[in-house]
Image (cartoon, rainbow, N blue to C red; front, top):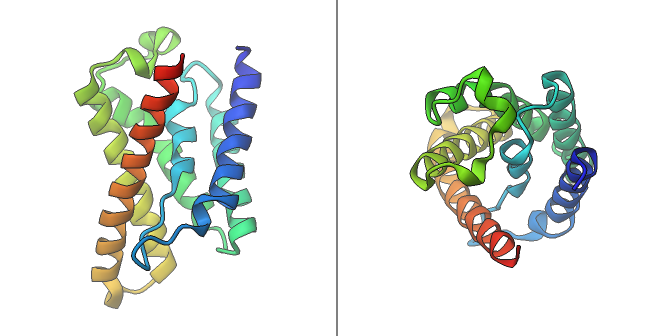
Length: 167
């Protein structure tokens, strides 16, 4: 598939999935999956960084627009998009020369699992911290981060397994 078409499909499918389906799920009253973080995980490394950061911000801002959440999704997604290369270097041990041939599906599962969980937890912690915007609710932030991260990770790995199985 053409890279531009792949990125457009990924962007719009995650946007519509999050806005029309996942934002309406509130498991046990406070657990909500935020699967749009998959955009940062699946975006190719060989693309220009500015375009990647701009599209990440635009996706988060679009979700904020439909969710009426005031920019917290845009900030959280942009932040993990910005730090993604640090964790690719740290956990997956990739250098700039490896970016051209990098494919997350060819990496060992343990490293990929750690990389994805770290990005999801950071995203959720920022998201819930900005949503509560108070240190008095730190226990709520940690509980929401933990449970929503688990729910998002389960949906992410389940969805990835189903999609990869069909190919």
